[in-house]
Image 1: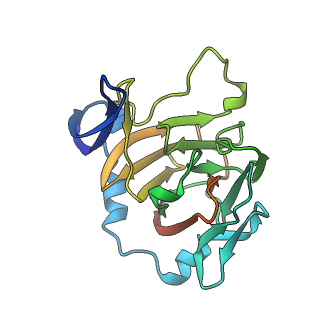
Image 2: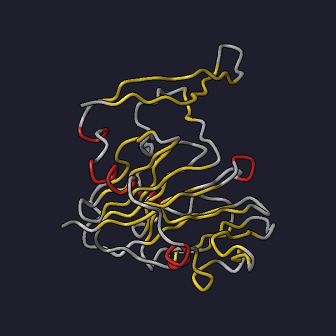
Length: 238
């Protein structure tokens, strides 16, 4: 079965100016089939406030240039430090089950490198300069929200090859314009990472994640940006 994707696509016209048009495409193939377990999880009551805090950002596992807000422990704030890329991990690491969380990251606060994904406890949390730090090595996997690219171990990628486009239905001159929020879907039983935008499943972004302990992670460069995480729920395979 396929599914229809609706959203906003940006392309460049002959004058070099960006133009926006709605897109509605029917996507087919195993990577685009919305998992039945995902619908089951989304039909469950949302995680309790206490559970959400147990899966929130970890104030002790972050770059020193970001901090978790005292009055909102599901949101971090990045200091306006020049030439720095900064990450934070979530409190909970996942080895099994299906886990879904939502990231709220206002589009105007993303800057040149805004990456959302998962990483191990060994993934670096700081780098000098502006870079897509999540996905830069073998310890993390990330989606660059501005470039619509997927990164994993990108520093070892041959210079002659480009990172994969995501969503993969995009043409060369198109980019997917994301709203302020997106949903992350980590299935440790299947070993996959996927994303949803506006309740539309965008397909599998990464495979081969079984056997690891993975944490939510983002990397940011925009001064004073604030990024929130809200754990939706988890579901063990029976």
